[in-house]
Image 1: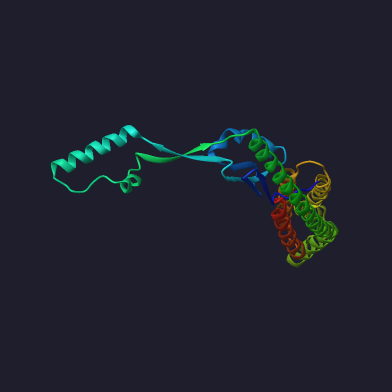
Image 2: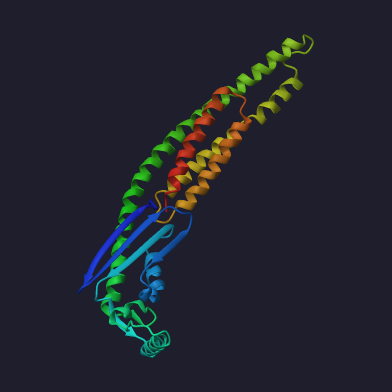
Length: 292
């Protein structure tokens, strides 16, 4: 199955007066990279959440955002450091007495003493919240998975179309190969005739040299290997497993054979087809980078 590495999922779940929101974004990346952001109070579930995500995905950068709001999650208490407060009051009275100040210590001054009075958040961890978070992650993962399947099918259609174009060009290269060899031999013979009248055109040494030169420009092996790679590519995209890296390797080998044909070519038409072939392969490469 051809899966894309791009997807998005969002799950909102309400437990009492607590709202749990999970968003998951997936983009292409060579290996699996999971980025998780969740409230500090639930950091102990990070490994569990990541393991659940790993059951769905094998490649790509997976960004998981979890937010929790509501009084069901956090209770706020006012904390007073009475010992420090007593010291402040004693210090105020000493300053007042020493400098004969008229101002009095008032209630309005208390909020400015941040070290004395503070709001502390006390987490309320319940099994119900824990289960709700894990279920929300599962549902969001499933949404991402479904989107990756849909986009993967579109990728597959595009890749098959490009493979068909590539195959047509390779077939043209194979058909052109024999013609090029004949034209090359004739060109060499004509050139030899123009330089000498003593050497006969059927001289065995001349034909031997022509054969050696023609062999250096022969692309039979490269064309044969390209057909083999195409067959492997088609087989790979029909497999029910992760295939992105395998497709990358096959395409890399196809580009290698194509470059060899280009370096061997002494024919303008073949050189032109090689450029077109490499262009189609580069477009194919862009699509493969999105395949899981």
